[in-house]
Length: 263
Image (cartoon, rainbow, N blue to C red; front, side):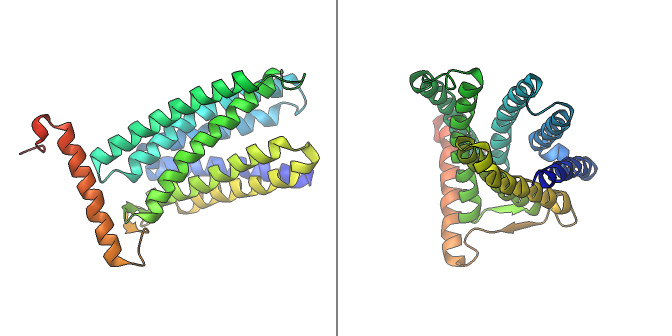
């Protein structure tokens, strides 16, 4: 099993390098900059993990630094996903990103309060690593809510997006869901009991990277399509009109006197 994990780590590292190269060559870097920076940070994290021993103090330090950077970048990636998914309706996009910021801020405060109120216990619970781990777990739960919300929006509402945008959002949701569940479940189990869950999540992680590498930015990537309510055209038209009406109302609220821009 250890050999499988070691091989998979090298596969993930190599796939990250290929994905970064593809994003630069195809121009995806300019369209989704935070996503590209996130993948770059993952590549650097993997490289750093190869250079230190798993049971050393250096590995703990490296893990804390990498986790902090990853958590910060995730915030910008999620906000970028909201911008991409709601790009066709600017007022709704601005509102969605603002609400996402409020949820993230609430998540940070809630995580800190939970840690302060309930993070006191035995000798292990008082350790810095445990407290940091608990904070990240709580933050991941809040971020998972935001990722799930934007995924639901894309899959339910008849939103016209490019194939690249759909691939970015849907695969990232799968990637983050797998990683968060592993963090929450396997993190509470002894190492030997949670190993199977970690290996499964690691495999999903690599498959997501492979999917992006093969399909993201390829031929027809900018061609638009609709996923939400493709099975019911009449209902799709009703939902589209509803979204347009909400966007128009928000535009009027932004304009002095309640008049739309250009009127």
